[in-house]
Image 1: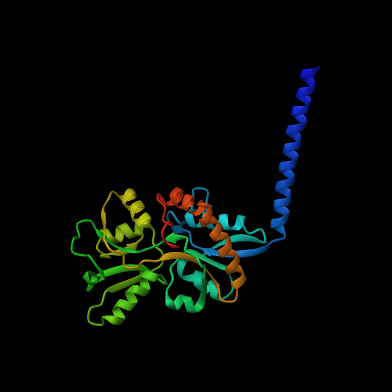
Image 2: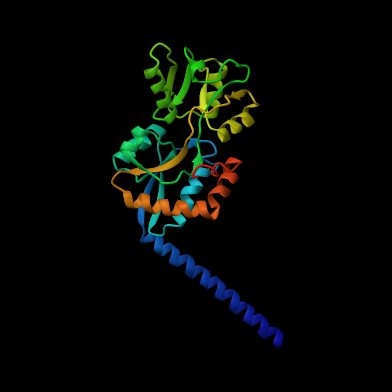
Length: 273
């Protein structure tokens, strides 16, 4: 009798927990259903940061940070839209999306046209990369007369443009392209189409791992910048709310944990000091 009573109590408790969990999940879903939809423009071809996994779902460090922010903001429901890198800013300016999320670095031109989060979420300093046997390149000046690839609309592309404007007799042949895959970059470097390209340390480590240590990273970065989420100038409240959530992720250590998990090291530790 006592055994049956205990079993009955256990069944009731389990059922209670299940019902309670379902109720909580239902309430959370209901809350999100009433939330304002926020469209997040991102890319899908940046390994480690934002890419499509084997199931065709967006994955990577930047995607997980956005999802973590979404969890902290019940008044919003974030949805992703995929664009080519160069088109994200155009969509943001036109009001077709609410947040730009593609490792955006700050520069004066962008600051005039968009709002930036108060906090960076990743060290996105850029370095020159050349073939391992190329020992002659140590700075941008060493790329004069050579061909360097950068993405259209990128901070690196702007750096090359400014170099050529400031050095009309010492120009770098800057080739601006859409976002390339690692495979495309490696092929173009091997066949001599490009003499150099630019990337950050986690991405450099990844491409070296994939293709057998064939490149050399020039010691000094050409830019020292965090990456930020950006917003339309007419949406300061959304920026303020995202700032608050991002600060929570920083203070709790969750941002660092996500960086270590997806990028292999804590690329967040010095960017907001």
